[in-house]
Image (cartoon, rainbow, N blue to C red):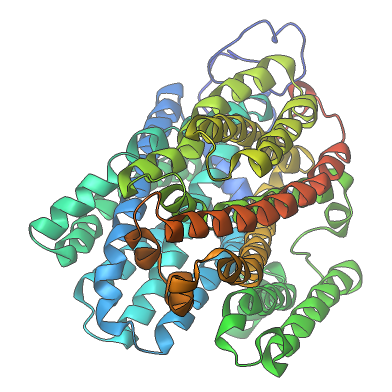
Length: 582
């Protein structure tokens, strides 16, 4: 449908048009060709956002970007603060057997919900999925502020993580909708920049609440702040959505018939069968990695084996369903087999496997082996967050001006990650200067900032605007699967190596305390630096870390394969979005 009724605006940036005469402009929003209206073949939510970007102004675009930055700032500060306050809420429930399961299930449900949210964003609209996420987040915070029993806490955690993950994901999709592919890496890096600041704020804020009005007001304050900060963006999009309808850019939705006919229609549009198979399969596959330790037989438990087999089979059934039976596919089979999409997901999962292997016991190592206190160890741990966010901005500029994301990832991001993790095999040992560990963290941070931006750009470059939300959701799930596997490998190495090495190194006088030393960081830290017991513990840490780092480095070989699979796409020549975008 034509957007000729929309107000005319100057074309100020070629963005994705691929027209060489426009490529000389290096900044500002871009308009697509004025004859291009919303894609009539796309689902309603995609058509609506294309209509919005066709009628809004440059000032509205910039206002949206500022709002999104502020939302990310508050959202990251809220997540860090509430994470610090959560132990005070759960302290009354620590002995309740449901608590660990609640924590695991809430995180899994929150992650898997992105798949459902992707379809909500595509079918009903971006603002509709966004407001749903705001409601879930706010409700979860309110419930955590007032919970007095484990049942309320369980429900609060589920609502909170569904909302928090959904909010973050919705904003990512908004940014993809409103940016050309050549600028998307830059704007994604811009959106992550609040973490550079909030990393330092969450601790003092949570401490102030605990010393002052109490943890309940911590949750309660953010339950008030969250909707106040997030709703203006919703109203901005709805305002221009209404304007697009008035100008005739958005066609009135046709009636889907009776209630039953509407259910059938939306069930088909949602690919409800495929969505249930995929979500259920992922949940079954991820759950064993988190609950196996609570089973008396561990990995041999019939429950664990059944969940793993069921999840694996469900994922195979999903691929078959999408290929042969789905009337409207959740994700086209051609994308499931696209080498760039497959490679990006291999990269995402392998990097997360590696990260969670070597990072799981990192803060404990810094305190026990290097003698850092909690604050100092957190500073070293935060190097990755700060360094990757800063470096990602530079990577975004490189992609914008070169049009290429594969070379910088294949020849810098992945190799430097392998270098940083590999060097720690030698440096993360007792009697090694902490400066070498910091050096490795800086390497990994810069490489990580490169990988994240290039990986997300790759999956989006491989598809049309219609499936951007879906491929981002699948990429996020690949990361979740990698993180679950990495955490499990780290725990397995720790349980197999650390107590054995403690028994080997501890002096005879401390052998009776082996179980307590193994199970408690406080007990480990109670032995003075330089004492025979502390030296023995440090050696056991060093041997355990060496095994973890070897495993973490080895698995990164898959990241080379995954990145090499990408097509060498020039994002400057790839048109994906329409209207006034950056």
